[in-house]
Image (cartoon, rainbow, N blue to C red; front, side, top):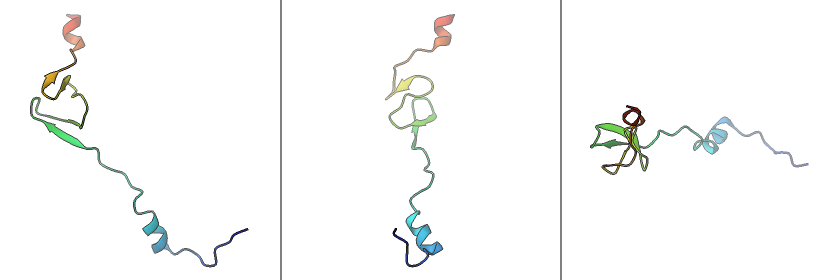
Length: 62
C-alpha cells in the first residue's frame, strides 16, 4: 500500500485547494428595467434583450 514519505504541510495543502471557493454570480445591469439580472437569462419582469418575452400572470388573471 502506498504511504506518503512525508506529511503534507499546511501551505502545500492550501496551495492545492486554492481554486476551491465560492464564486459570485455574473450579474448584469438591465437598462430597460433598471434591475440586475443573470447573464443570458430572462429578467424577473419578463424581458430579454430589451423585448418582452414573457407575459405577467397577474395581468392575465384580471
